[in-house]
Length: 603
Image (cartoon, rainbow, N blue to C red):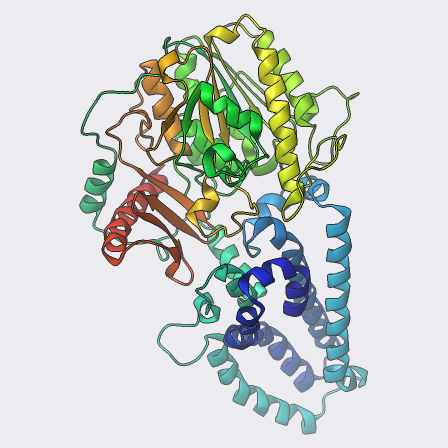
């Protein structure tokens, strides 16, 4: 399955270097052996009981256990091979967030993915069947009966080999059992690909599943004295000056959010100098206020949406929207705005069951929450959602039927795999990630058309538009999800309510999605003390930093650099700080996480 992975992802392997990737077959051996030993324990026990008792029932149990393990391993491996080009990381326990909505998975998968998944699964099963026959055909053909000449040697072998299996299962006799870091070896450019190939898929998935399905992360999270952590966290949110860059001419505007699915700053000229993909958005930045060092809190839509409106940062391996008992105790910006007479609506062109996004907004009192089930049935749609152009038509109709003041939000979908949009034009972008990049070109055009129509409406002059992405995405410029730049996303505020002298401004304070609430409320003269994890990016005294999660870990970004840390291997996968800055920033990040996790647990 490792060979098939390399063949299927040859482009990414080439980036990492074929020589570097070939080392994976050596460095993977220990963790592969450990995984084999763990998986062998149960079949070995059943096999011994069968051979010593002669029971036909135990013979059947042995076959079922083997078949179950083989099927699980093959399906995990075939699935990981197929999703890696899109996700850029190994399968983890978070996959159950997707599998909770199997219709979503089916609609996201293209026919090519289904074909390759099926082919790799069949090849894996045939290989397993071949080995199975070589090892057990003679035993399986024998008539079950107790034979002491077989039973006694089998029992002795079991007593002799079981301790060896246990030692192999823990990776040796060292005090601390083996972990995923035993298979990590590469530290060069695009090293994550080589390391992902080396790490055993089954072991990695089981480990992440155990972590994902518990809220108690005490054994993997950093430790720090409580008072010290609180002091450091409070200092991060303290400001030396209370003056603001006041960008609004009216502190009670209508607010229109457009949450842009997977828009990466690494595909935009206005943020990273990649030309030709988002010309309309880039032009729009001259009319508004662009936050040039803005980052997503996580890598999935439910994390992005919850953090944007709730202001509570993301924690590794935890989605707040999937924790109703906890997120209901947190505030959301629409709840504060409702006290001031604001109507709130949210619409998505796909299925809001994914990640419990719809329930999150309903729980927090949005007046209307709509998804694909509310769209007219006579319009064309893609596999995953309705096209952006139809979403904007529906959205505009909603806004026009709403009494001012309002908070209206739309979540786009055409830039999500399988990139649903009408292929009416030639695909202008060629090369790597061309499907995604061409969907960005389409999405940019439709956003422009929507805004042009908005300008004709009477509510337009008193409306603040907030354009923000829910998370980053792989681009030709950035394909490593362990690097901070992978999470670089756009945040733009614009509209007639922006003061003329502030239009075209760039704000360079580093921030994340959790900072939107305090930034917006600061402009509206609304108390944001209910959002202690949100800082005002338009206050020149705000500290410049952002926390984000990565697969199985977290990352920290500041003016001095950035790092990402893996909870399994317990080391940095990417970091560009000087030794002095790394020490200082690591303390800040640990304190931030310790206090964030403490508050999460007491919710």
